[in-house]
Length: 184
Image (cartoon, rainbow, N blue to C red; front, side):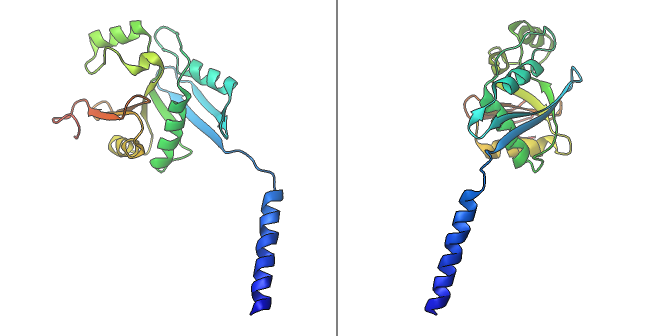
């Protein structure tokens, strides 16, 4: 019995040494996005380990620019982490996210407020901290549930328009077009 336990201990030591000798690659975080208004697509690694990739962030900022004015703003990179985690929580970690609205200039925000219901005067879209999305193959209701399960930021549910809003603001939820404001 002593010989057997010594053998197991030796195998354990060899396994640990082999594991530590392998090169360690930092976790890559990737987003695949399709912009419903511009028709553009992007498939990009934006983070390796704890390091955000500046070039990738710049490309994402441009991709999420206001499609009405062409203006952009530097996005909160934590929103990209939220999107990556959301696709995983929805069971579609490699899915392409359909972007309905990214950054919104003050002009576009006022334009939408004048012509569309449910647009906040001080929207986090204007701070590049919010995005409206769809995830093909996942119902809007299930996508909202996945977003709520993360307990990170605001989650807006727009069932009649078929999208959800997520942001990096305070944890809150709302439903536009639901009788009680929270459920459909």
